[in-house]
Length: 288
Image (cartoon, rainbow, N blue to C red; front, side):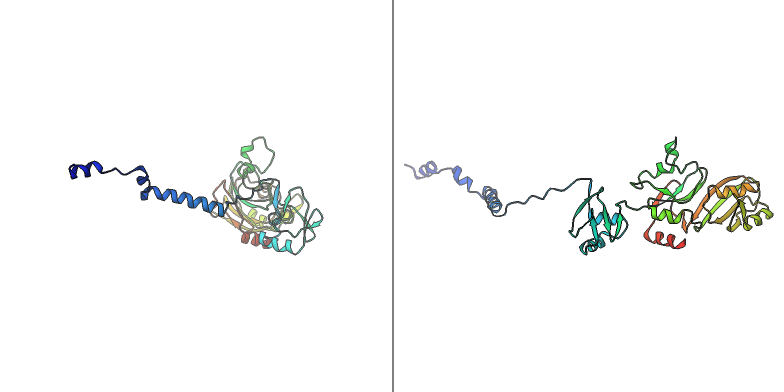
């Protein structure tokens, strides 16, 4: 037998078992075994179910939303035992309450309404009324996404007036501000005719409206024809600026409130609104 033929005929192809020992096939097999081994040693832990009950809220958030303090500060107060829920002291962190629960904070019953202080640059033709036949012509339509509870205006503002209007859902704040006659307001108005010097002085002296003299702090001519006037006063009576000039025989054709309690229209286009900053709120409260 020819040796070369024998060698050729005796050469065997690699078996399937040998192919299976290649480096490419060993890696996934080894990884799979390692994973199974680790899985047995360290069982996967599932996350606890999240409580999505919309009627429940964490006690610290409830307190923070009431405006008493921050959530972090609320935790400290809770731990010291000054918070009661339905008459019982609660010191547990993460405790949840319902909106129907009665929460007492340091002797005072509180509600979880997040207090809002909104400044809007009101367009002409918009009412400041909740119930109106034309909903889209109410400032409440413009403010529909501003707060979850009803906002109430500070002071009065007529339909045809434009400019700054401050609203809030903080009843305590509203009660202390409305009717105070201490909030500085500046208006720019336009008359149907020139304001005479006699009437200019008469307004500064104080015009009587409904048997009450209306004090005016400042009055200015804004142009040469003396039809555009700047006026500063603190009275919150309904249509008070318009009524002052009507009393003297003038018609107010345009009225724009440019300043209220130190707040201005800076970076606030017509028809837009924004929340007051904490510092603005402090300054506003100090002003009255």
